[in-house]
Amino acid sequence: MTGDWSYWLREHRGTLLAFAAFIVMFTIYVANHPAGLNANVATTAANKGVLLAIVAMAQTLVVLTSGIDLSVGMVMVLANCLASSIVVGSPAMTALGVLGVLFVGGLAGAINGLIVIYGRLQPIVTTIATGAVYYGAALALRPVPGGDIDATLADALTGQLWGAVPASLALLLALVVIVWLPFRRSAIGRAAYAVGSSEVAAYMSGVPIRRAKFVAYTLSGLLASIAGLFLTCVTYSGEASAANGSTYTLYSIAAVVLGGVSLFGGSGSAIGAIFGALMFRTIGDLLFVFNVEPLWQPLFQGIVLVAAVSLGSVRLLRIRNRLDLYG
Image 1 (cartoon, rainbow, N blue to C red):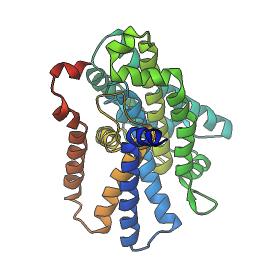
Image 2: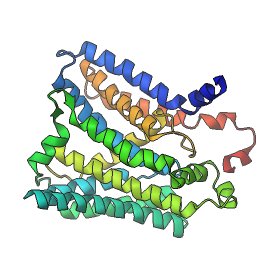
Image 3: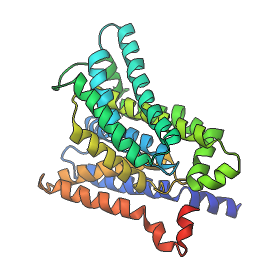
Image 4: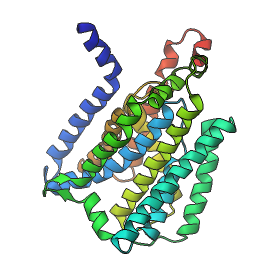
């Protein structure tokens, strides 16, 4: 029994540490916020955190297969611009628009996966290229910021449940239950972990490598499109912002590492990445409540980003044989 608990703690150590750090930071934040903790403060913080958390979930799926998706931010931007154009009108038209946004996101992820699998290109190179294509499509849709979205849908996703609980947290929980948990417990999910741990060993064991990668990239694109749809609900507009896409891509990598997901693949959890994202967002809120000059805030966040990525490379210090890097 003790052995089971110790194994469980080792397996979920990153998630537990991210959760504890987030709780401490958020407690400090609300303790120093002029309004304290109320429904509006919680909703505003949740909306910002959930947006990054969804992108971090998308990044996690690819990182688990020992890749990095540098197009998640651009898929989010593309979905944002598309949603501001088609998620309007009658309830039926709005529903079709939502399905269209999700389809485009899933298609973008599937294209990434197909190029990585059959083109045999490095995921970083592939997603840099496809990210540029997706940004170009977003710019074609929205040369200038604008558009709209169905107000009922926006209020349902960004408002409050029972007058106190942020609806965005319910959306995040639904994504964990509908997307992450079935993936994690499925044969394809286990195959994705195996591929990330050692692709050679997974191949020799008969693991469906191509299918695992394809599903991981497709779900990543789908989640990124949900983030773009949620962004549209928050802003009521679409904007083809390269800076926004690049920022969320970098922050998603930081959130993944802060959540205990190994950049080498095969280890970690999307739930840990979610708490990593919430923690990273809370850092920005702490800088705000402590009246840190806005010009200094990117510096502090950059330091955290560098530290997070460096933590993901700590494994290198423990490797004695360079061949272990490719095991």
